Amino acid sequence: MLFFIITTTILLGTSTYLGYRVWFLAGAVADLQEQDEETVEYISLLESSNTYMYDQIKKSYMAMQEIDRSGAFESEDETGTTFRLLKEVITELKEQFDAETEEK
Image (cartoon, rainbow, N blue to C red; front, side, top):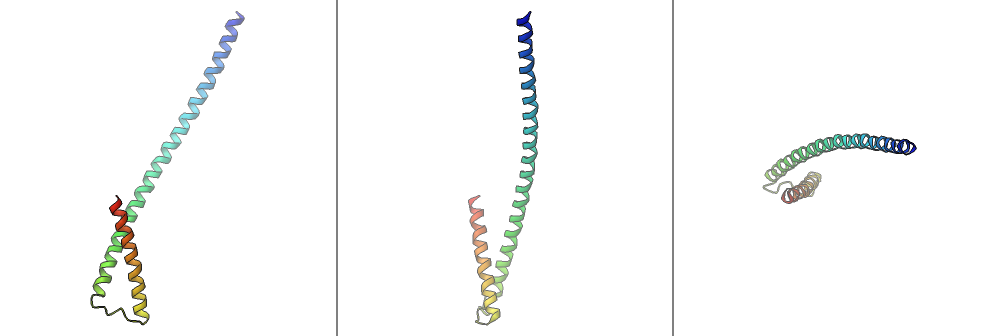
């Protein structure tokens, strides 16, 4: 009889502990799934933002090339310096975005 009581107590304690662990781990898995969905949504937002930025950079680069087809803005005054700096930035960004697109 004493053996039965001790065995029952141990089994009850073990099953209670295991039940708690299952409940706790189920909650942890649910939290991870929720975070995963948020991460996927965030990555999707970043990808669409990058695509938009790439399109804008490409349009700006083409517009800059069209404006400067005769080299009229390559003078040494303030307009030429500003134009040259903008052209350098757009060229660098275009190279970076083109490299990222080639990697994919």
